[in-house]
Figure 1 (cartoon, rainbow, N blue to C red):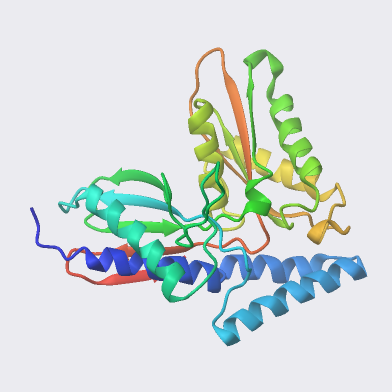
Figure 2: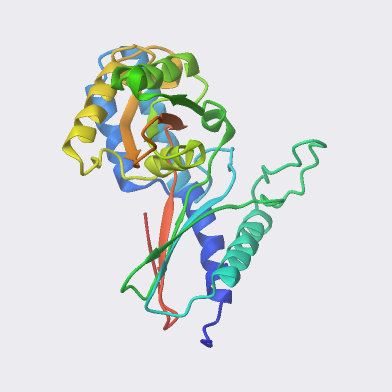
Length: 293
């Protein structure tokens, strides 16, 4: 076993939660600025102006972009080139989320599903949510933190289609979900779509899709074309920023896919609100940490 000091992972987990809530990624900032320039409706343009001002205030005061601190999600990639203890990583990141909530401090959003008792720690039974993956020939621990607020998360949907339904049925489901969501997820954000896999995998794919930098296309050209098609269709709805009407209803549609069963064609939608928050870090065996988005 290595003698790596896992308190560094704990501190990184804490910092990532705070950074994600306070520092909007550059790609999201650019997308919002572009939306402001592109928007033709005066009322919607003022809303974008207010959003950008909100980000400026958060920068100046080193404070939260949004009061909904969300539920903590850690997407962790463990490099095969170092003997990382996965169980210790999970325990330390959980404590990091607790410390962020108590030391920053900010509102703890986790609660018991039945009693609704809130421990004010942002964690609890099976929280944080962890996605673990493994990377060959890498020695770092890469952690992507995505806080997920309820306004957007409540708009999540999944449906099991069959191949006979056709691809158009999947696209219609995505569009219908956005239309039904209306103002609830604080548009314009990122529409994350999962296609393929199983009922559990497809929802994970949709969640991973919202964590992709704004406008970064799926490497499959057919899927990338579908992303553009859905973006155009969603923006044509006129829902607009905060659901009050306008040209821009989404900053991007991102699709993640997986092979599926010959009799299945599942699809899931997970929406991210306009402050598409995320923070990333790479932790190295020598104790160094690189922060990013």
